Length: 412
Image (cartoon, rainbow, N blue to C red; front, side, top):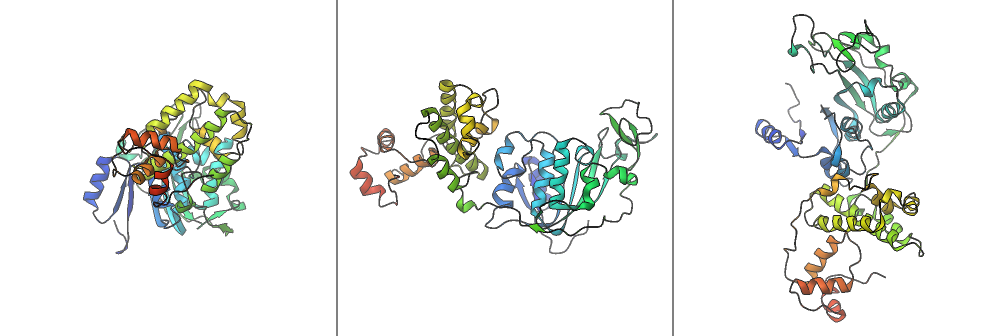
């Protein structure tokens, strides 16, 4: 392969074994191990030092995102991993940079409203240079080495970065948005369509997965980039980690806590507080912050206790109504399935179970504060827990003497 002499490569690899192999083969490259969502949220899209790339190449996973979805709360809201990869990585692509993705056929051809919206979002961020549909079934006498995936059709997209996000894609992209790219460019289907599908020679013939492309892949034919219409763009929205308590902006947390009506039932007030704690916990897990995520087990117990006392959260009409405008209540509801089970992301743990810091009141109070998700620390709770850990009796005089000097203040 050829590359500029000063190219700097970054690789994202979920598998620890593959990551180790990459580091051995390419010692000059930066290899980030684990969920891509974690790296993107904490490094790639960090406003203080965002990462941009002139070239992005990906063969993303094609399944559901699962718990990884919680690791990038600002990322593209989809449950499908490949859709997230395509659209989110475009936000790290430099203006006129190139992105190449190998993906299933749905994004380019599905006529459903959801996929029309996905294509619209993709084209707001990038220009489609070209796309090719690869063979999935070898010709007679051929074998698996002739196709990209055996019996599974994939598309290769070549995208050029806009350097920002447009209000709407240009008019020249309408056919792409409507899912007609390959209808308009049949020579970019690199083989014969068999089975069910637009352009099939024998559409009544049933094949595995509904449609196959029969042919031998020997490389991409010569092609010309689609004309790129200039559109006005705005910078991609980036939240500053310095102004965040978690996935919810700090100002919105304060508003959420203050906006609970005074006459609201106690269960609603507790749910909002739990929503803030959960937001803090999940953000800490995403950062790999062991101290910040230390209260995960206690948080799960408190959530389960809330459900045991009050029922399935999604069926609480008062809570659902409050969540329309209250970010913390909305976060609380997002922690549960419709049936009342907790989402898998809350099972992630990166911290030891107990306190292991300095044997001082300020250090222990700071740890207890983080376990509580950054909510005000009650003097009674501090006194009880400090005594249990052998730190002695804590009263108002001791708080003023030791915690005031460490920067603590009352929360009115």
